[in-house]
Length: 269
Image (tube, rainbow, N blue to C red):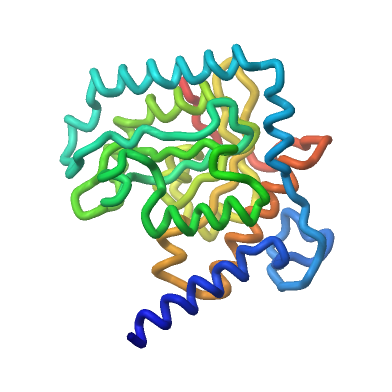
């Protein structure tokens, strides 16, 4: 009973820290690592905005979804996961708006994701939903996927080789959705997209970019995986994630759309 009460209290605290009324940044500190909590106005991205931007682009959206469906069919035919050990029932390919301005990339499906065939629907997914809501977006406004499309045994962290084998399908997902911003959740996704071996502490809190051949680079914000937050449930870690997400919100809401500040790159071709 005591443990259950503690879990309820922790989730309530997360709702507070990831709520729209809390911004762990001093005014004007965007891009810096100052995470002191103060009450400042929250810059939000209205879900209606993405709908408006896609108005008149029904054909584009339909085409993007068709390409995603074809990519999934090709993934299923080629079955790259057959080249390594998996413990899966369903392929968890990805879901969301095929024209999304914001794309979340995690590492691999867990047990609940494997059961349902949908990404981020377990405990970590419930926390991600709160994070998305705190950004004043809906889950259907974004696109969510993982590096691996099948569950590793025991929810193990994807290996470098497993990520390498699945990377072409992820990179093509990115090309099809063509988001304005990518948020990588956790080390496997961040290291693959940025092609670097730094710690999350060294990568998060500042902009990077994902460079694609013949296409515009996409700003990338690495941050901690929701599962990490559930394991290391400290106020400091939650403030860091919220700080990262606020930088994303401000980036999406900025008319200027300034370019990323660093250029650790991974071609998508």
